[in-house]
Length: 190
Image (cartoon, rainbow, N blue to C red; front, side, top):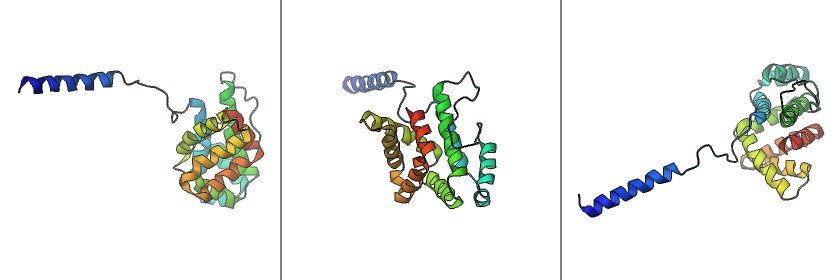
């Protein structure tokens, strides 16, 4: 091997070595979620995986199913104000309130046909985790653009679901437009 090739080989190896050493490890990006946001994913996953037979049985069966599938109460469409969990941060309670409001809205505000549409919509956007990962940065961006919380939430839902088509956007927009869901999730996302 000539001196020129040897030098070039060593130089390229050094560039490769230094480039890997200086890449930030564990840096946060827009797709990472906090532990608190897993309550929202847990609720949307429960909806996504809800058997059609449960939906066909109506609101009582839906409420029973959701209470079995998630680690927080689904009793009403109002956010949880004080769950007695003193170790949780306010953001944790807000996220749980958002997830609880989604579950409560399914039980009290939506017909079985609309629950089926919401379930299909969550699947169409790539699942609960994908939707939540998309929702949060769009909401933050919309708020930074000066939108009100409710307008920012509506825009974030539309943008997070836009690749899945207009029917998906409509179904998820209807779910997140319910007053209790809109209020609780807007507060939870910031």
